[in-house]
Each structure stands twice: as structure tokens, then as C-alpha cells.
Image (cartoon, rainbow, N blue to C red):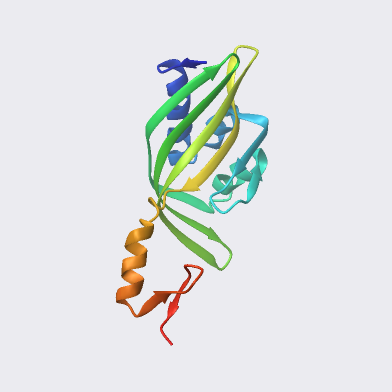
Length: 157
């Protein structure tokens, strides 16, 4: 395994710039034919489905930042993990969804015939660290809840 930057890191920058512009020509070249994306709620999209979000005009980015990037290369594969900060609108029929979120993104690239292709992508919403258990216990006691024998909290009866 090698820690990398430079050429491999540019792959992620090119992907992010194409996403921001909705540039399906560039994305079409970057994505492998058997590309699969896993969205932040667990849904999966193929290359065609991923590109159609832009082609249809359903997804429009106002801002798309890509930072906190680390890259590890394993032979002809590279794993890139970074943070995406997105401001966008997704509209499909009567559904309109404003996106103002940060995601931890894992990109998996493979090198085929001298070209790096994006094989997979996984988005996870950055929700912050879980609260300290002791803090939650103090807060529950203050709010009229006490632990039962099993340590579960509920209202005082």
C-alpha cells in the first residue's frame, strides 16, 4: 500500500468539478461501465442512473466542495476518502429536496489500460460524533427520567 497524492488526488478533483458543473460528458469518461454508487440512505445507482440525475436536470448543484482527501493506492486500485460539502436542489416530479449537507465520501478507482476509472462511490452523511453516554444519562435524570434495573431510562412513575 502506498500513500499517494498528486496524480491520484487529481482524479477526485476532476470528479468533483464535473459533478458541480453537471458535466455528464466528463463524468461519462470518469465512471467505469459497471460503476455503482451507494447513496447516503443506502440506495444504489448504476452509471446510467447517476448520469441521468444531471441529464434530466433533476439535480442542480449550487456549490460542491471536495476536501480532507486521503488516497491509498494498492496496485491498480486506489481508494480515496474525502469530505463533500454540497448545496443543491433535487427535483423529481412533485418532489423537491434541498441539499445542504456534508458527506464522507469513499471513491474506488481502478486502472484499466492506462486509465483510471471510478468504479464505486459511497456517501455517508456526516452527522457528528455520538453524544457521551454519561452526558445523556445526566440529562435524562435532570429531565425526570431514572434508570431502571437494566440501565434503561424512562419517565418516573
